[in-house]
Image 1 (tube, rainbow, N blue to C red):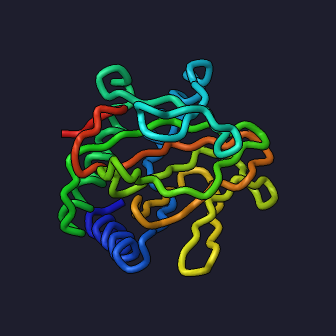
Image 2 (cartoon, rainbow, N blue to C red):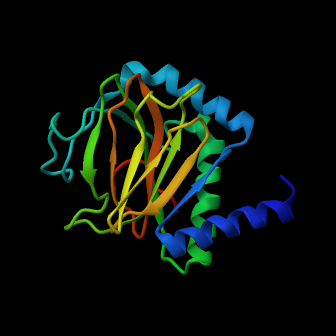
Length: 208
């Protein structure tokens, strides 16, 4: 994408995030980066672990709340994903200056929802750990259609907004106030999910 068009693209979703607390961005990654991420994901599926809820010291598996499997990324270990980390740094910088946010780090994981998987309504920011400021989800689902389920449902001002988890779609939203859930997936559902932080957390990969 030419620089001028890229700038317009970024400005649009920053404005949407400021106005409605979320933004949807299609065709988020360049083709080469998307292919790299999908290949890496498939190569790590045996290393995924059942996701837990709660903060690190008290987190536990609660299948009544969430049923996904995750693989946390680490920039030093997962160095083949450098193009992804570069993209995240770019987004962090754009939001930092475009929205005057103190974004100092980030953490990301791959998420795999098996057929029948879900995540009940929740906020991404913990009461005792308020460093998650912006949530990001990039979907990695080829040939996803209506009826496949797995939508991201956003609850806002009495409305329910359903976002289809199609390949290379990114959703960004405020971590502290936007209640959301993952509806039941009728086939395996894949995503790359993370948070931009106002201070490093010690969990997952950190930025600068």
